Length: 310
Image (tube, rainbow, N blue to C red):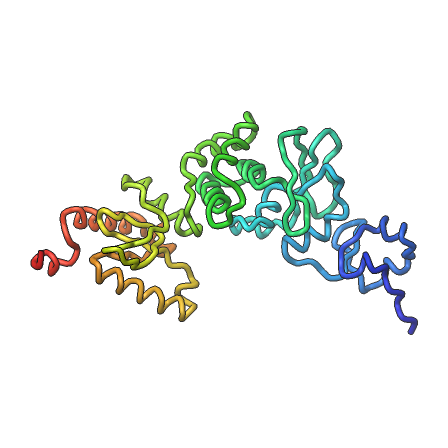
């Protein structure tokens, strides 16, 4: 059996366009060999792409300088949390900026945007719409709460953009689909959230009439740092921690959470642990419980033994 001829060094272990390989002297026969993957028409890859990042890198050689990955594709590349319903649609979103035609290739969905309305950025080795413009594009695809979670991620734990930059990007795109939800989302996006669960918890509390909690609050008593909690009502000494599946499945995290709760109890803080069910079907009871704790904390110590010692 004749050994396959090695590809030029620049094409090895990467995705490339068939046209570019032919220009470099690679034969048609070599491009049809089974060790190369045809992820998209007109391209070849060394391995079968599976994640969004890998699929984007496989398609990237087909993109022109005026084209960028956008919408949910750019959001996924940036790490923005997206609803699971988008996992079923494997198409990559690509926006053409300017007057040229949108990309037409199987496995991709082409969009067009006027020059100056979408800015080009780079992430994970591929061109994408800027984080702020990606947020704007999500306005026509996400619900209001999903947009707030995306915005909290971008200005919060991901740190890709500032809230002011999101506001400016939305102002540039008057009259687009989803503009009402985008403007509403800007009113409720907050810097400091560190997970979708924290955002859902905050929204559940505020929309049912409770004051807005402080995000990622450092509890300090008599000059001593006690703990950092997800959400807090310092005046009432009420802390709220959102418990994801990580807290249940990781023993080290579980032990750390137990210790944090005991330390807070020692300084007369209530720690309320909340889960997806508490901000979902059990939200009314959860909010009722927080309301009672706020009322009790504002009247005096949570621990009645402390009241007798005062």
